[in-house]
Length: 282
Image (cartoon, rainbow, N blue to C red; front, side, top):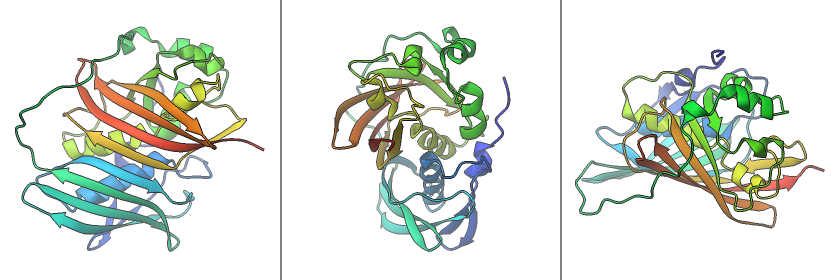
């Protein structure tokens, strides 16, 4: 297994430049655009740097315009609320004077509740039974496991491998075991930011899978428009997590995708929703 050529902890380690202002840089991957998950993860880190004693429980963001990895990104944090049990931060990512991402992050102090329920872990094979070699053999694209690890710092084991060669998934329900490639320190906030980073990868695959479109279909131009995420229970982003996707709707060049993220022991740790542009390349 090759090591990632980008180091996720370094990407998420923002440089403070003033009160509530942070600078983030992009890895040199040769890509023309910054990965949307990087913007989410870095904005989450900026927000977390301004809150003590509380962890994020939700985020809601909009991607405003694409940005280039050749220029640094400035994250400006606004304090919207500092209550007894909750805090709220607004973060704007700026490049060359233009806003490129706007995100709201809500924090909540830990407390005991009277309700405790969750959906069940889908009945799929564990990651140990889904070999990387099988994925590599099925995929005819260059974006195989090594590419994904090198350029996104993510390890993944897809369950429905056939969709990578055009198998149609009628209900759009797909499953991927996912984890960040780097070992992370014992910092719950960093694991939340890392999972937010990784959650943007592959979510729109559920839209494409309904039509037998492989994830790396060069005929299509998928792009994230917005992203929402809720964190339910503790987890480690550097351990295998099952990312279960589905797509309830697509219309007018946009597709909606949802995701549930489980630990291997069945614990539901996060929920995700995203609408994306899914246009055919001209």
